[in-house]
Length: 372
Image (cartoon, rainbow, N blue to C red; front, side, top):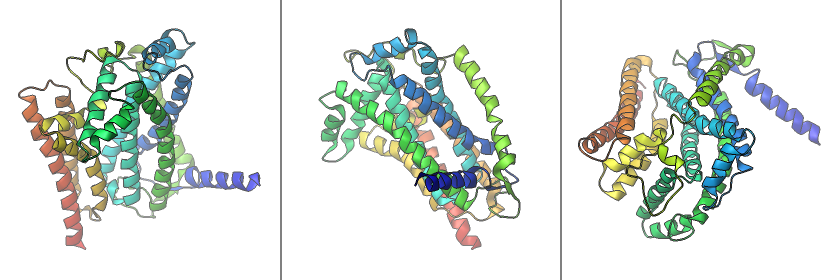
């Protein structure tokens, strides 16, 4: 009974990684996807080792992290690699999405939809893991973010009490976050497999912006060797992680959580700053939360556009360059104090962010109808 299952899995793996036809014009930009798969596996493995000694108890969580760092054999390596692995994950996730926008990958509807879903779940997982450290910044980040649920009509306050498992962020909240942080990566793993199946079914875009079957080569050995170049990036990652382990961290994370004293300036991790800037740019709480959700969910709507003409390539590149510039400006504004002129700049850049997404969608939708 087991042999047909094993045989089927081997045939599936062969179709995915050996005999899969791929365009000859795929550049190194297509390595971002394989690099993300490597990082996901790396994060799951290092996370499983950290789980062994972590205590999901509000009175022991911070001390258990310190115990891993100072007492567990090689525990500091797993903590440093897991922390910096999250930053590496988002670097390549944003690069992968940039490549998708640049080469109009949203034409591949199911590939794009599954990819955006992975992006949202990775953001959720990163936030949950950030809270588990139970430092000052992560604790108060949990307080701020969970309070946003109160905007849900009728049941908002009830939902907050359910998430908190009480009347404030406490031991029950930490237990819930720990459970979700452990489970969601495996859900991500399943969606990644679906993402690959959709990609191999529809074919990938290329530097030629086409999906034709006239320039295909087998995945192995050509692209398997090209993906092997990712090992050079891992060498740089290990060097930086060991030389500057907490370069992207916050000093407040080295202070145990204190529910009676909040940090002077609450700032999330760098990969959340663009969304945080949009949230605080709008003074109305409900509209701010709606804008926060729309900043990510609006990416789904790009899958509805139909861009089958190469006549707008230069316009597409121009719009994507502007979109990336606005995203970087929002990231910069997100770490600035909530004062003039940063509040006004945050609002302006937020409008530009949504405006550019709307223009990209509108241009390609109407151009498709025009050239149809």
